[in-house]
Image 1 (spheres, rainbow, N blue to C red):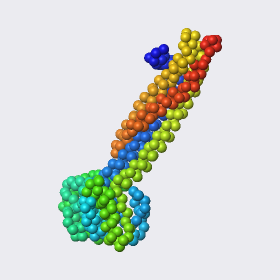
Image 2 (image 1 turned 60 degrees about the vertical axis):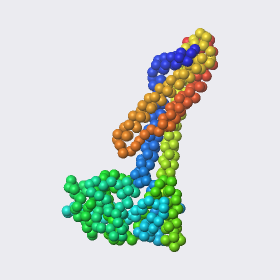
Image 3 (image 1 turned 45 degrees about the horizontal axis):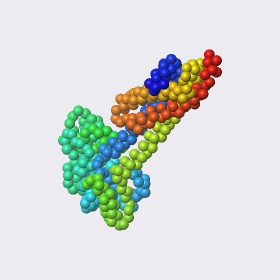
Length: 400
């Protein structure tokens, strides 16, 4: 028999036993759909985190007070040997590999205007923060450039702060009270939502010197540094560490984190998570393969006379083996196709329910799911097929 005849025979056998075929097809479909949906969630989490870090800035280096040996993570909150200061931040510009530096001070403070009041995150920084964090201001403008130690009493507010205090009224030019100080609003940040746990729509950006006085914080929360290019990041890290070590009397009492190291750390974690959930979902495909074997063993027992007739008409054991394997392959492929449809339907539904979450099925997972489905279908179909191939035609026909 030719391959086309094998497939036609298998299709007829599948259609003739609708309930049995539907059970095997459903088992395969559930397994494939589980792999697609779960790996899509893992891949979506990876893409979301990568996008969040990309939104932090380009060629970014973060300097934190306190020494930590953990690569890619923030140091624990402990007493530090020496504070980070504005002079420390300014000294980093001596490095030829460093392009921009933005000192940052942060703290919660009450914000009020016109009898309305709310809590907001007061962030003190400089003009360079806008480029380092990819911020956009509309309407108005960002903090003016100049000496970070002599910042004017001006503020740029987030979209949520503007809506809570000013409603539909333009805040630009209005005087806003932050804590016990007054600031003139010169701009509004474009809505950007949350970024690594910080809601940028609920912040008030003021000059760093003003923030230090307002929050009574002589030490900087961190220093953001931008390398001149991606290739200069290692040189910038080396220079930043050396400059601060010299300024801090030979003590390496800061933690320098690169954007790439953070990305690599989270990428490894989330890739491992995706592979783990794919393996867990893949177990269901093995279970589906066992179901195929059990149902086909029953089918062999039910079709003994049919097998005997085939062999009596001249079909060899190899032909019968190929017929049953073709049937298993057809069921596995059909189940994989239905599973892909269900899986992509689930991915689409998740994407519509959570549009900010970039859920997507990785190609390798789709290929692996289909491959494992077909492989398990064929593997667990071998025993029933071999059993059918070994039947004696006379004995098989005698059972009719």
